[in-house]
Image (cartoon, rainbow, N blue to C red; front, side):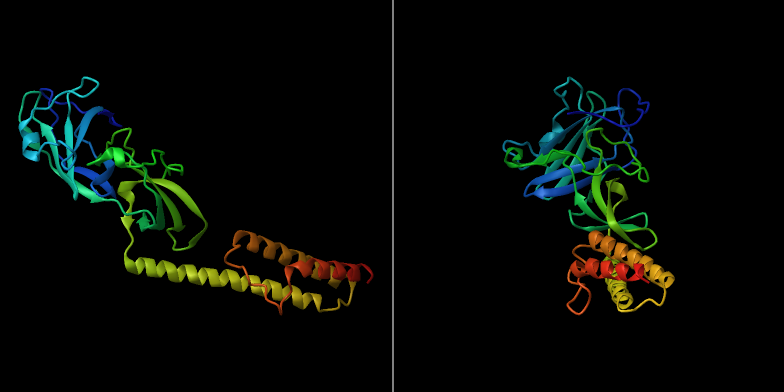
Length: 302
């Protein structure tokens, strides 16, 4: 397939691309004998890079030796192939290139980098997030027709804070959806923020980092619940008092209004977290409005 590469193309001699750096290949195993190539670094290639993929387990597939003995041909668009990416059931086994139109086929240097699975905690520039979606890009499969694939791209918008650091095919942008749950200061992000991030910025979080996040999250949740309980209790305490003057009653009414707004907003923002916080021995929110209304009438008659 002819894949346009996102960068100006480099000058090459005698029609041959010189592969100086190992090609980074970011992959995701999506099924038995099926790999999703999420991104490839093609810094040593021009703006039009024709790539073919071969799975050695597919019916009638040649062996790696046969591939290396067979000169490259043109793709469907009539362009000479630049690369062949070869995989088996375990991963990428070779990346083949050719020394000029009639030269020998050889194995180019490459590094395969597994992409953490959906649901994995990852770190990126001091932040922590959870991978929510890995879009499909180039599928190498033994039986591609048997796969049911989601061909849609990322659900989140790309973040301007993370820019791809290498050339990659336009149809292989290498973006992954990540939900940010902890900012670079170690604070819980609520509501969580979704961004699309180039895959090379993601590192799977260490177990101690995940433990620390869970402690931070639990502490934050306990603080939210504690603040809500304190606000409910303060409203109850105020409503049990009898204001000595209209001025004092007005100040108490304003404070009740502030607390009621805080309680309502907190429950709206954290419905699952604060469910059940209002216990039987506290003021039920359904009764709070009526008690506040009675308090306001009392203040008016002072």
